[in-house]
Image 1 (cartoon, rainbow, N blue to C red):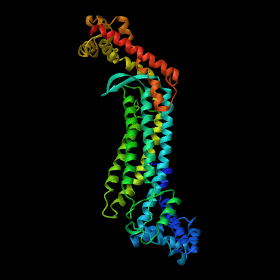
Image 2: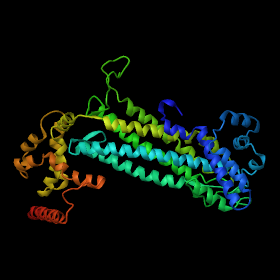
Image 3: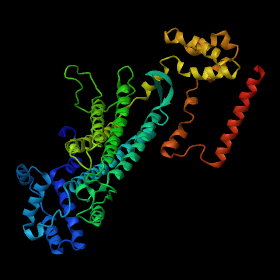
Length: 468
């Protein structure tokens, strides 16, 4: 964990004091149920809670004991016994349990706590994206494929895509949280030989977890693999949006850029620079979060009922992955919330290729007039290539082409260069993503739309038939 990329609430989950508090609660709840079952005296269970409930655990003392015992759970139990200060009560701690019962259950509590913060982060990000998407719902911009101008879209649609993606990520994280929220109090090799399964059920309920069906002494690591893989997918979505913003901020594009605050410096050498440092940082952080998914997957294959090859890995990736992703989600929310958007530059870029972005409409119109697709493509491309070389305007060249003029009038050609044509279904897409109302929501409007589509289809058939 690097303080530069950490926020206090998430960091607190992984602090020793929180971990030891969870360990204590697991042990104390287990002792409570053992007392209910008559295995240990109720007075002993009560004394453990009395002394430990509000205790502050001495981390330095636990470390001191561990240097001798070489065992973290034993060191903790020794320290708790010191806090309880009653040998008759503390001797009943950890009855029939094994270290993994405490360690694995605690880790899953911490991961669910982390997931709850991450879900709040995603909710905040979704709110920011939604607000900006609606703000720029009909702001036209150029869509690009392979980095090359393709056809018009809106900036709102770019953000709607991000909203839909992070909505899916939220669903994935909810599922991953449910999958990881299990408890194991099953003793050595997971057979419950020395502890009643009812203890596990009791502890699970108290800790807000589900019972692990088969723990084999450790909770199966496929659960953890899925959890960290989900974090990796979320990080990839962060990077996708970050890269889009980085590209849009390039000097040659300059359609949007990160907010540049008063007094901010972009370069130590060049005072004019306004660099996309936040989204570049997010790209790097996403790489780190994704990198934690692979060791989590490698942790799945443990020896027989249990080994500890996974333990050192999880001490790294548990805190680092969740802390880094928490920071990244929060940073991305700030970027989106304050993003500077330049509609005039978007329009300038839309117009930069002299109307070539309407080439598909011309192609389709020619096919509707009876020209084969192959010839239609040839005619359109023949007039498009000079425009790439700066040798004219696409519409003007089409109007001068005798083969095109034989099929399409000037008025028909001009109608094919209508920007609004490309944006006519923006409402439909927004309705799918955000649940917005759109023109086809009522029954009457649906019927009207169906009639219009049918009439359009009949018109196309009537145009084609004379050439068949």
